[in-house]
Length: 252
Image 1 (tube, rainbow, N blue to C red):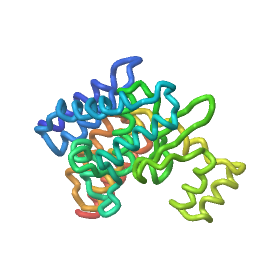
Image 2: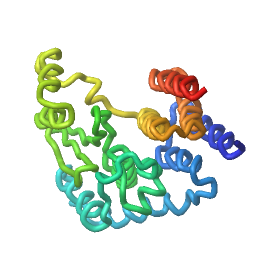
Image 3: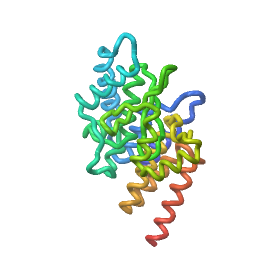
């Protein structure tokens, strides 16, 4: 597939510049091109620019982090109408940035990309957090960490509220067992910063799962090929390859 080969080449180029962070917005749009070969990257980059342009004059002079996050929520959730797709969580369109922007619908990680990219354009430090079951974004400062859940209307959470969120996702018994195992703290990996590469791998893992649920092996292979281009040795990639092989064997 010519389009896929071009995408893989460009993904590898984005990842290969020493000392340079992967440009998340460009890379996420490359993933979307696997489904939309004629995708107009400039249009969606311009939309992210527009959103940051709307937010910039509303920012407080003090750059108080809580107020900045409230500005982002007011703009993205209340005015622009971005929301979590509760009705059809496993629709693959929830993982393609162009669809998320056009439909104002997404899942936690794709909505987080909107927050991260608007914040980056504003010079406001936000990072992704690979919280299990519900990707989050975080602002870290000397005073306190603030977490935002873009999927749930931009809910702002303090660190001490995260165990309760874990319980809501996996049940109180599971959450209690995890906390007890780690001296009443969440495991560090639950709160680790997600690099752009981590975010891309997690988005592609989601797509792989969706395609395997649908028994769409061709698209599943495309997702795994993009994962290999980003990080050939990662654990998620190897498990993805195994999942594809298992499905192929079951269908033969």
